[in-house]
Amino acid sequence: SAVISQKPSRDICQRGTSLTIQCQVDSQVTMMFWYRQQPGQSLTLIATANQGSEATYESGFVIDKFPISRPNLTFSTLTVSNMSPEDSSIYLCSSVRGGETQYFGPGTRLLVL
Amino acid sequence: GNSVTQMEGPVTLSEEAFLTINCTYTATGYPSLFWYVQYPGEGLQLLLKATKADDKGSNKGFEATYRKETTSFHLEKGSVQVSDSAVYFCALSDTGRRALTFGSGTRLQVQP
Image (cartoon, rainbow over all chains, first blue to last red; front, side):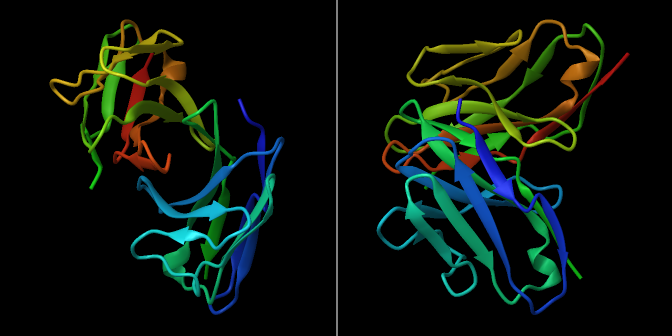
């Protein structure tokens, strides 16, 4: 299985500010994804992070709010911009190994006050 | 579009009881199916998977069979333990993009 780390593991932020979450994978992977898990809810895909091109966003998520970078095959960042309390969630990155199996990072727990 | 429907929780069982968590899906094509588990305070872990019809995934005593005719992937375990207490998510993988569509999750509580 993949080893995926995320930083920070948790943070408390003030509304109106931005937070950048980092995701590091232990080997080169083609596909990386960013998900959001709101309190007590399931996971929702935010976007697919593509190396060398812009991220592909799901319905309801936009680049201005969640800009994503993918500078190489082992690293990606997700920024949560102009935060509001509704952005309080766990943000998880994942990568695909073994053809179709996704492995997840430990998540970043974000609380916006 | 793709969707996954799971039975609502929480499910509360006594230790050594039989567990079934129902999962049905709607998808185009031939998706792969997964069960993920989230233990309290921890990240999401792959529990088992099946990639084609009639495949059975198994791990740690848990099993699930990919039933194309009923579009189901029910999770079962013959004898649960307190340590199995967690939230279980059924998910399917889009055959093209590999992105996952998750069910709502089912919280399992096992009492000693």
